[in-house]
Image 1 (cartoon, rainbow, N blue to C red):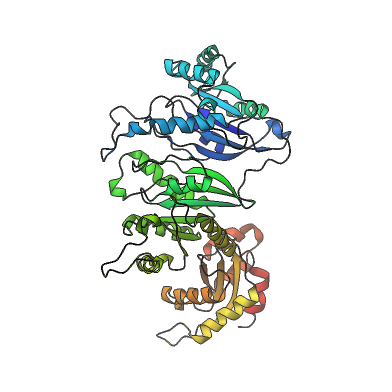
Image 2 (cartoon, helix red, strand yellow):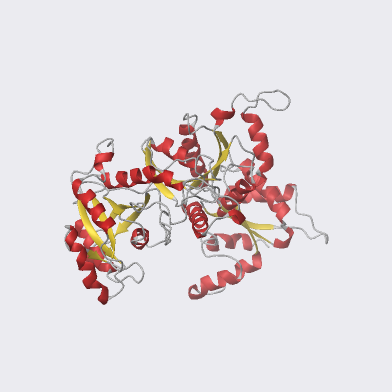
Length: 519
């Protein structure tokens, strides 16, 4: 059976996003006092522990939704370029309905400190009558759960004095409300224990973890949400002509050829000096977090637009994260057949030449020509991402690396003004994702950034990961020897002192001794 699904619903500013973050134990959803911040369904897979750890933990999928009833803040109906945000109302309500329709458990969130409102009563009536959820959704493949539980959750119960106020919500007909405070974790354990008891009995394997987390990044209106929906086969995220519609990083899980992929749709970014309000900064932070937790990245560029400063900044973020990247040129259906200034038809080769010139830091990354609108090459795009993940997960033998590094240095040694000769004592791949090669030498200062780039190019020619980032670590022999002289209790501290992390050195100590003896 699929893992249990939990939907969080309620009016704006009752603490839905804070509740999701509490359950996930990390900042997933953007939390802000302004209504209408959450628009899409924001989902996260959570390991829910049993009370007293008496039973195995359960994987659940928790989904935050937009606040029902108010979709723009007062005085904020129009964004900074004049677009009418009220036009998103139907899309947001559809996302809420989809979340409710496919949930096993619905958590109806209410603000204890604000008390019961008319909007709360309206949402309660819609939940009881089924008008919010299944009545608006066409179900696919039996996604609707056989039974649904609806429980009221009283949030902002920040201490004992608020408990009597929370009991007022029992009048809505969903039983005694579950109480919790996301601010100070009051009743947190009781809330999570009660939630575990509500889960349906497991029937077979419950699995939500994906074979690959694939982040989709790009500037505004590059087509990220359209791409996610095309790959998912449904309107999983809101697509709008209004720039900046997506704010949170939205996870969408799909199945492809017996493999599972979590697509992470991120906010479209623009220059920081153009950010309008705190929410854009939060969205930028979520995009960076999405890059950090991704296994691979699709950098989506608009075929109709020039490579911009934002494209370059996103490419730099991906480089710094050392994640495999596919550069996907979207909207090919709109530019195919166009002619350049010389009257020649523009083809994929022209775009590749242009992108290589503009995004030099990703010169090794493959380029895919796609169209989210027509479905052109979308299946191949996923296949390419899996291929890059496989490259990044490859480990090369120590013997081959030692021979290769010594051959590179002997063929063209680093230059020295004093005539000092570089010598390589040892080379090894110390980790994967990204492939990380540690090289122990006599004089690290000889290995300049230019020479390291030269070595990196030779690595790409000879090693089985030519299209993914490679991390190169060059250290002196003395530092490694110093690390060996300390006892285990101080190994980590000493590793920091000599410029290594314990993870980088995990495969070095014993095997390296034979090479040190050669000096």
